[in-house]
Amino acid sequence: MSLLLKADNIEGGYGKDAVIKGLSLSVNRGDFIGIIGPNGSGKSTLLRLITRILTPSKGRVELDGIDVAGMDPKEFCRKAAFVPQDTLINFSFSALEIVLMGRIPHLKRMQPETRRDFALAEESLGLTDSLYLKDRQIDSLSAGERQRVIIAKALAQEPALLFLDEPTSHLDIGHQVMILDLLKKLNKEQGLSIVIVLHDLNLASEYCDSIMLLDDGRVFTEGTAEEVLTYQNIETVYKTVVVVNKNPVSSKPYVILVTGDRTCQRV
Amino acid sequence: MNSRRLVILAAILFAAILISATRGVADIPLRELFLEANRQILYLRLLRIFLAILVGCGLSVSGVALQAMLKNPLAEPYLIGTSSGAGLGAVIGIMLGVGGACLPASAFAGACASVLLVYAIARQGNKIPVQSLILAGVIVSIALSGITVFAVTMSPDGAMRGLMWWLWGSLEVYDLRLLSIVAILVASGVWTIFVFSQDLNAMSIGEEEAIHLGIKTETVKKILFLVISLVTASLVCVSGVIGFVGLIIPHATRFIVGPNHKVLIPASCILASIFMIVCDLIARTAVPVMEIPIGIITAVIGAPLFIVLLRRKQRVS
Image (tube, rainbow over all chains, first blue to last red; front, top):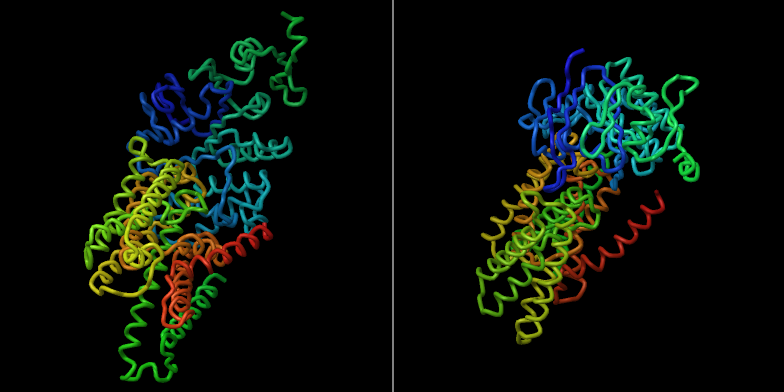
C-alpha cells in the first residue's frame, strides 16, 4: 500500500469562516473511501479544498509526495479527477467531445488530439457502458446517461485517484447501483483509488472499504463500515434515531430509519 | 463534415465580397471591376469590405469568448460596458467641441473608463465572479446610456447627426492610419482568443469543471476580458457601436458547426464577415443617395434571424 494523497490538518472554507476545522486524510493506492456526514458537516468543502477549488487557510495537501499548492494544475489533473453531483451544460457538445476534454490535462494549449486520445476517450465511454451515446448531444441526455459520460470524461484523464461528490444523488436506485458497481469494478480491476462523498449511508456501507464520518468540519470517527455505522455514532452525529441491522445478502451494516412517533415512544 | 461546411462558408464569403464590390451608388459589372477607370471606387469599396470583415471577426469572436466564459448564451461583447462608455465618450467629445482625431480618442477613453468601472464593481478580492460581472455590466450600461440620452436631449440639433454615427455605427473608412492600428489590435486579439480555444471549451462546461481539467480560469478570464475590452473599444473608434453581431453570429455559428471553439472561432469569423458585408451592402444601397446606419440593419436583420434560430433550436431539443 503506497501513499497517494495526504491532507495534513487542513482548515478552510468560504470567506473567513472555516467549514473544515482541522482535518487529516490519507489515501493509499487502491483505497475506496467513503465520506459521510450530515448536511453542512463539510463533505463537499473537504473535496473542494483537496481538489484546489478552494485554498486551505491552514495545513497542506500532498499528491504523490508533492505539495498541491505549488503543483502545475495540469499535472494535478493528470493524477486526480473529479466528478460532481450533476453537470448542467448549456452548449451542445457531443458526448465524445465532452469525454475528449478529459484529455486536456495531457495536451498543451494548441496541441490537437492524437489518435491515442480519441482511442482513450472511446475506451472510457466503453468502461461506463455509454459508447453508444458518443455522437449524442450532451444536453439531450438523461441525468443517468449524462453522469456516465461525465465519469467517462474523468476516466479519460487517466487518473490514479478519482474524487466523486454525491455522484448518484440525482439518480434512481437502478442507476445508483450501476454507477457504484462500475466504480467498484474500476477500483478492483484497474486499481483506481476512489474518494466518494455519499449521502446514502447504506450505499456507503455496501461499497466503501473504509468510511470517514464527518461532524462539524472534523472527523467524528473513521474505519470500516462495521466500526463507523453503529446506531450510537449515527444518532449522535445525525441527531436521528436509527436501527442498524445487517444486509442479509452482503452482511454489511444496514441503517433503518425510525420515524417520528416511534422515536417518542422509545425516548 | 465540419471542414466541408467551412469550405461552403468561405465560398459564400467570396461571393459576398464580389457582389459587394460591384454594387453601390454606381453598379460596376464584374468584368469591368478591375479597369483603370474604376480603380478608385474599387479601392474604397474594398476598404469598406475590409472594415466589415474586421468588425465582424472582432465582435463575433469576442462574443464567442464571452459567452463561453460567462457560460451565458445571452452575453455579448458590449455587455462589459464598451458600447455605452464609447457612446458617452463620443457625446461628451462632441459637446466639448473636440473634432477630428480626438473624437475616436474620447470614444476609446469612454469605453475604457466604463470597462474599468464594470470591473471595479464586479471584482471580489482578486477574483471576477461571472454573475457579478454580468450584473455590473448591465447596470453600468443602463446608467451610462441614460446619461448619454440626457446629453443628447440637451445638445443642439446639429450635433445629433454626428452622434447617430457613434450610436448606430457606420463602415465608412475615415482615417487609414487609425484603421491600420485597429486592424493590428483586432487581429492579434482574435488570434489570442483562438489560442485559448481549449480553455474556452473547458470553461463552457463550467468554471469549476475547467479547474478540474487543469485550466487556470482566473488567469484566462483576466487575459481574455482585457483582450475583449481592447478589441471592442478600438472597433468602436473606427465603426461606432454595431449591435447584434456579437450576439447572434456566435449562436448561428454554433448551430452550423457545433460548440467546439477550435472550429467555432474560425467559422464565426467567416460567418460574421458575410453578415457584415451583406448588412453594409444593404445600408449603402437600400435608400438611394443616403446611407442607413449599419447598426439599424444588423438589428433589423439580426433580431428575426435570432428568433428563427431560437425556435429551430427549441424544436431540435
